[in-house]
Length: 79
Image 1 (tube, rainbow, N blue to C red):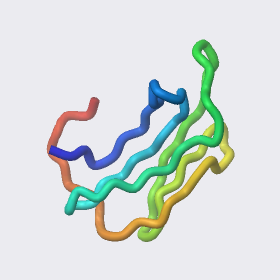
Image 2: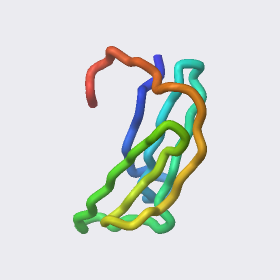
Image 3: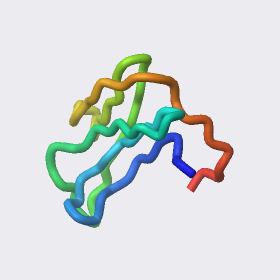
């Protein structure tokens, strides 16, 4: 029941987050340093390599986190 990854704005703090999940259900995430504003366009990108999950906002690295394992293989619908 886990999602492989998510890119979202958290309504509690209006920050952008990229979350990545491994097969054991461990979540790794990176978040933006500042809140985003309603009515303003942003370019948000979440990436991962073999050891790190990263979030970029408008081309600037916002946050990163070390990770372990492979990505959870989900067959759920993209939402």
